[in-house]
Image (cartoon, rainbow, N blue to C red; front, side, top):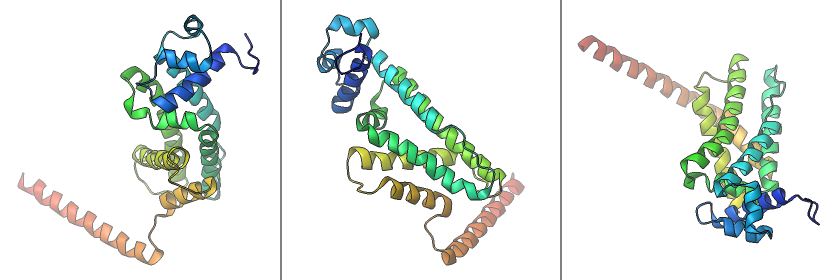
Length: 225
């Protein structure tokens, strides 16, 4: 059934649920809040969804589909392509959540307060982004451009920074920057670090000395056992 606004009843319910979850939080929101915001009868809600969790799962499935379409593999056969390709895709991801801040609030702010089943649904979206980031890291390593660190650990570190920047930009408003500046800063920190070149040499030497010291300690422990 099409509404006067050109949306189906199911779409109206999803839009209403998204706003209610963003405003009240997942736990505080109820089916009655959703049907009131959508302007439909309770019986109509249950024609499409079994519960609050069911409508939340439908919203997460939409997020997963959208992210999947944004982070499809891009050609990256040479080192010169890594930065522009990453920037291009991250801008799309940021833009998606920036254009729908209720959805951003839903996936970012509510993530820590969900029940086990709802979190399992949301974790699919997290895993999708994490795997995409890890695949880029692995490709960069194969090209000899990125250092040999654990791609999974680095992907979650990167994802954590991505989430926090989105939280402060799209939800709290504490971060007053352009999307492009945010993306470039994030990539520069992760790809180049924050130390000037002359200090990187010092830190690299200290790091190498520390590795040698630890190796010597381990060697001594091995000899004592």
